Image (cartoon, rainbow, N blue to C red; front, side, top):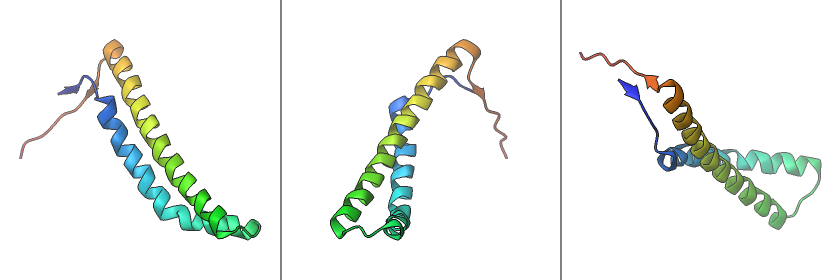
Length: 88
């Protein structure tokens, strides 16, 4: 069995949501590290946290989409990933 192509838009969702969730989890630590360097106000901290979450989510979507596009180009020229399944 061989994967001939990937739906790039569909593939973009998975890393986009994964990076978004990771950013939500790690944002408090980023906030803490920012406060160690110098005092930031609540407004600045919230803006930084939201910017980090949005950046990681958008970067994940763009990265996943590009992986799909690049995979499809390579698979057309050199063949797709071969997968072997075993039935039990």
